[in-house]
Length: 210
Image (cartoon, rainbow, N blue to C red; front, side, top):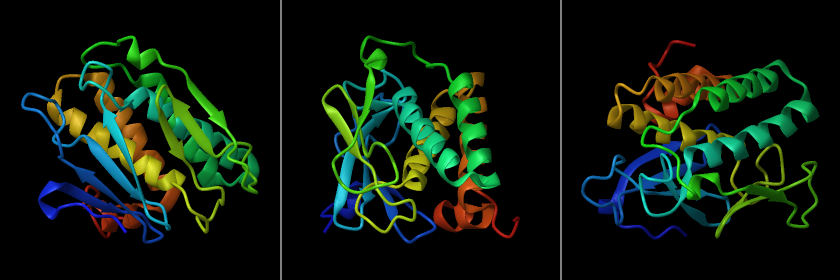
């Protein structure tokens, strides 16, 4: 059960399989570029919370955009290799372009260069790894491609990064690399689940346009 005060919830976005991600404004400080700091993902067992920031200078701690993109790209590459569908290949292509385009709007820091490592948690899975770690943080990813097990799915991870970039374009409207990265990220999410599903889950994409 996810116990969060409604007043702390900035936004709720829904995945195509019924899971959700809550974006929370808890402990957000005046002057920060994002209106939220925490993201809580429905893992089908409970909720898993993580802190997110645009880059290493935008908040004192948390996963940066580049680090989350690294994890999403790595998971996308596994899905593309395992399923070899056009949709999976398109997702991977969009993620490759997003990673290539992104540049920190406030500048990199030592924290942003922290190495992301990938490892297995021992559960049976077609994926060679199910946990991503970066410094003191970890992300438990779903071991099942169809989301039947506990953990964060690729779609939820794409939603988190998409929201991060969406709000970054508002905070830094003249940062062209952020806009370009966000367009590629939004395209990856649409390729993953379809434009109509993204619209139903977030309201960020016009409905009835698929």
